[in-house]
Every structure is written in C-alpha cells, then in structure tokens.
Length: 414
Image: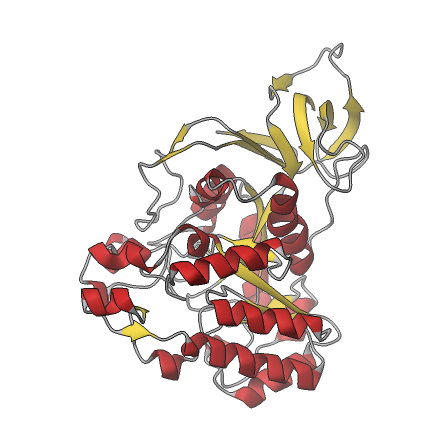
C-alpha cells in the first residue's frame, strides 16, 4: 500500500534533501519517490513541516523478557519505544535465562517479529552474566548478534575481558559497564554533597573512572573493539577522549537521564531517580554535554530499565536501580534546545544502528523506509504503553512531540 508523507522537513546529512521540505511516497518498506508530489491521489499524512529523520535506534535497553515479565514484555516495551520515537531497540537481559546463546537470540528475534518495531538481541559476554566463563558469542554472532556485554555488571575478571576482546576481534564488539562494584560497595547515589545531606551511602566517581581506565588498558593491549555504556563522569569521558585520540577502536554512550537530571533529583528520596550509574553533579553533566558536542560520545541512550511497583515503592535503600524512559526522555532532551537535528540523527540513529549491525538508512528514493517524525508542539505525557512503574516523566508536559514512526511498512502515530 502506498502512503504519502506531505510537507516533511528532512533531516538526513547523507540525503540530497537534507534540511528541505518535501513530499515522500512510500510503498511497504521502500521509499519510492521524493519531491513535490501534491498532485498524487493516494492515502496521505500532512506533516505540516514536522521533522522527518532516519529511524532512531536505542542501543541497550531491558524489555523484561525473559524472566521479568511483571515489569515489561517485548510487546509492551516495543510499543513504548515506538511511542517514544524509536524504530529499533538493542535488547539486553537481566532475566533468567539471559541472552547467552543462540536460543536466547532466537527467542528475541522470534517474538520480535510480532512487535511494533525491530528488536536486536544484545548477547551477554559471559554465561549468566556472572563474569566467570565466556558465553557462546560466536554462536550468537552466526544468528545475527554483533554486540556483547553483561548488562549493568562489571566484568571483574580482567583476564576474562581480555579473552573476550581477543575472541570477538573478527566479528563483534564488547560492551562494558563502567563500574567497579568493589569500590561502589553497595552505594545508593553519587558520593558528594547530596549523599551527605540525605544520609545515603555514596558511590564515588573513582568507582567509574578506575574501571574505565582498566578496560581501556585491556582494549589497547588486545587491539579489540569496545563500547563503554552509560558513561556518567567528567573524568570518564576525558579518559575516553584521550583513548580515541590514540586511535583505539572505542565507542561510548551516555544515558539521556544523565543529561536531564543531576544528583539533586534524589534529594526527595524519589526512587525513580535511583539509577546505575548514579546521577552525578552539574559539573559532570556539563562535561557530558561537551563530550557529546565534540564527538567523544557516539550514542545517546534511554537505557530503559523497567521495574514494577514493589521494586520502587519502598525505602530508598531497598529500591531497585533503574529508570524507564522510552516515553518522555527524548522529547524532554529536545526541550533543552542543546541538541540540533543533525547531531540527533548521528547519535540516536546512524551510530547506534551501525553498532547493532542494522542496515544504514537514507532518505533517498529506493532506500528502506524507516522514519522517526518529531515536531515542536506541546505534548502531555499520559497513557503510557509501557508496563513500568518507574517512569519519572509520567504526567509531565514537553514542548516537543513524537508525531509517529514509520517502520516495517506501518505508520504508528501518536
């Protein structure tokens, strides 16, 4: 079936229509024509100048299944991602069994066929994410997975990380979590003025920076490929900047909530803001924005980690870490007016898609039709598709809006 998107303001640095307002005709999953198509007689949607860019991709998020279906399912998580502007999600797992062999990969791919968007399995680097024995990474690679990491867990065994980096050199990339759990020592929030004020055990910056420095040393030794996820400190991004300058095959991501909130958000003991890595200082946040602008940061991520009411509506010390942000994080980030459209496309579409092994998207005739459509109109964030209890954006108002996404031949409008 043909569908005509009228008056679309295109953002695609690789397209000849970049920053132009045009009509785009799609048929199924292909772009068939671009230009002034106002005379065409077919089903149409007038975007009235809304921004249309290549489909946004989320690099690492937990969608509940398998094992935590009370918090989220692949179906509800995918629907939430689509509502938030994403056409693809890299699916990690905290559940049991995890994604550690071809069975886990096939489970996500099979169930993903009936979800709203494209789901890409991100495999564990070690069996049961225990950091003791390598997972079946080559087997997972043969079924389409090229990114491997123990989500939210540091690989404490340095030799295991060394071997994983060497083993995956021909076919994949290792994703590491920047936390030394021994130094974090059961901390609850970032160590500093706020942790002292509220009386909660702090996690020092050094718990992140020591781990990043160790992992970079191992990357340099092995000449492998590494992604450092969820960087949150000024010194952390500086170490990554210096490593990149030395030519290491290194990428990194920053969570949107670290650009939106600082450690002061936990001063009211709101467990929605208990995340890992913890929210940091205003100085750290400024450093993350600078690293995003100078290209040190490759990807922005939601890091959607859904929890149910029992895991969050409790004492702060007993609450689980994690924030569910598919519905709300992106539009509130755009409200900051610090992220231009071209940079958004790079860090939320082109770069994460490449790291997940997804095909490149371009707004040109004959290319894959997969779009995210955004505009600057007030949106009230209510009626969420996600099952998660822990979304701090519920009930908020944004000056930006996700108009909809087009993916797999279907338009999903909000």
